[in-house]
Structure formats: structure tokens, C-alpha cells
Amino acid sequence: IRRPPRSTPKPSSAASDVYKRQVIEDPENLQLKNLGIIFHKLVEQISMLNTNSFSITSDHILSTQIKRISTKLDIQLNNDEKEKLLSAIKATLSDDKGLWILKNRDYAHSEKKLNYLCTETNYFKSSIIDRTFVYKKQRWIIDYKFSAPAKDESITSFINEQLNRHAKQLEHYIDLFEKIERKNPRAALYFPLIARFAEYDKFAPVKTLKIK
Image (cartoon, rainbow, N blue to C red; front, side, top):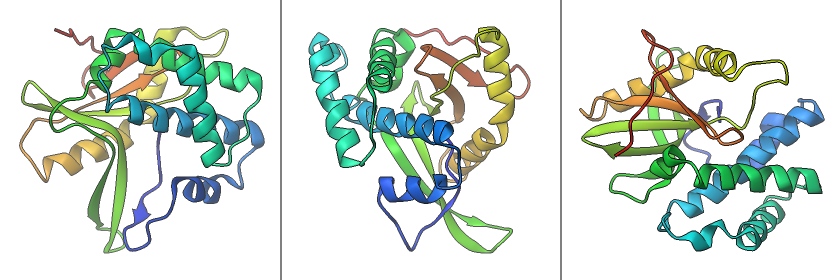
């Protein structure tokens, strides 16, 4: 999920930051982002576990966690929204690439904060990476997008549009990692609502990753 750069001297809670960014948005868009935030918190917890364990896919366990997180963030959910979150989590945990992203491995981080000097303002700012890890000596950057194609839109068209829309964001993340390490960073979007993974490549927008 895309976040505007934040000033490093004044960190604040996730719920507070979200509220400040969304007060001027329409209620439907606001609630969709809130669902994305709850999803982030839940998969962050799951990523610390052994994702091969079938117990974490229990509807009861996941529903309990969704309720706990939404209550802590003071986000009200109706039954349809709870079901959408539960469906997204289960789809991710049933997807090979979803499990690959969440695997508890070395150099893996959720909500990774990277500071940088903004050349336009000459102030230090920070960006938050949804999920990042090293796989086969390459740095992977994953950005979750809690969105799905419209009823009359193909998945291919939707994914291409999303990659184009978020290209600058992903290039920014790649640039940040290139400045601090030499691990040939690669970036991708992951759509939990449809369990689809799309790697960003300015020369070949949609690529398939073989998971071993």
C-alpha cells in the first residue's frame, strides 16, 4: 500500500497516520484502505510463524485476529468486510507466491522503514516497505495492493494498469535499496484479493516467477 513520505523525527501510530491521511477521502475509499491496513498487520504476524502450519488458516483463528486488530486500530467492520479480509488472507495462504512472500527467512522484514534525504526539500524523510527479503542473493521488495479488477475488467488489464500506476513508487523503493546494499533489488505487487503476483520491470511489465 502506498504511503506518502513521512518525516523521521515524529513517528506516530499506524491508526493515527492513517486517519490523518484519509479524513478528506470518500468513505468507501477510506474503508478499503482500512481493510488494507488490517491485512498488513495480520500478514506481518503470520510472517513470523511457520507458514507451512495448517493451523494458521483456521477461520476461527484468523477471524479472532481480524477482530483484535480492527478493535486496536478503532476500525469498524461490517460482516461483508470481515468476510473480504478472511477471504484475502486465506487466498494468500493458499497461494504458492503468497506463502513465498510470507516465509520467515533471513533478512526478511515487514513494514520496513528506510530513511532518505529528499533532494527537493533537503529534509530527511522515510518510506515504508510492506514486505522485503533476500532470495537467492537478490533483494525482493513487495508492495501489497488491496484492490481487484472491476467486473468488466480483465485481470491482465488490471495488473498492467496497476504496474503503470505504481511504477514511480516501486522505482523509488528499488533506488533506496540500491543505495544501501548490492543485492540487485527486484520489486513486485501482490494482490491478496485475487492472489496474484506481478513483478515490476519497466522493460517487460508482467513477469512470472518460478518458485522452488
